[in-house]
Length: 247
Image (cartoon, rainbow, N blue to C red; front, side, top):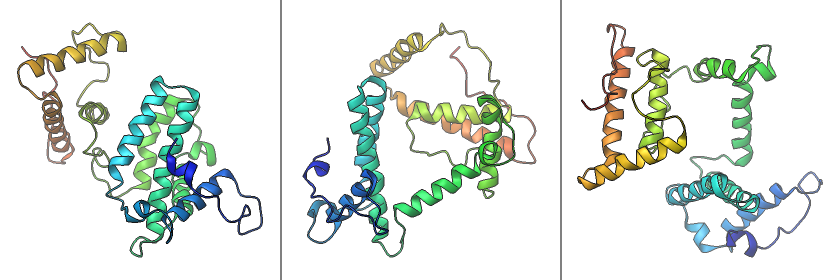
């Protein structure tokens, strides 16, 4: 458990401003505020959005590990640690004049986004299957963010190379640059087959002094360039030739 949770004093009151009993989430929000307030924790008071990035990355990876390998208690703890990061950033913003928003504003923005992206739940659109929702999802997002001009917009460049490659390949499929069901002559039928093969590729690269992460990222950049070229109105057909097995 994060020691900041266990060592923080309880809020002065167990009632919310409206007089209703506080929930555990209310208490946690008040705890974060007290830690960062004058007379609270000096380390917390010194942090910035930027200084917290490495902690967010670490806590996110710990949550992933809990999801994949941990127990119920592990998942409970790591979800709390990630939630703490969100609350910390929101409290920082609430005390930064140029930002001036708090966790309630974060929640309101997220609610608005989720309602807008689910007209089949909150509106009159009918989508009966997960496949139908996935097919309509890009349209919902496009209505929400009309300023985006490329299918690549919104993909974080800092994603790990494998996750980035998967994301960009999906966008290339949507444009028809790559066939979703195009098969490659590799003996892959499950993740149990895929894992050792990927590990063997990395081992081979390492043995030859090559950086597998950098190599994959470079190939993804080439694919991104082809996608952007294909989106240009004066271009004809493009073939994503960067995806190929060595001859």
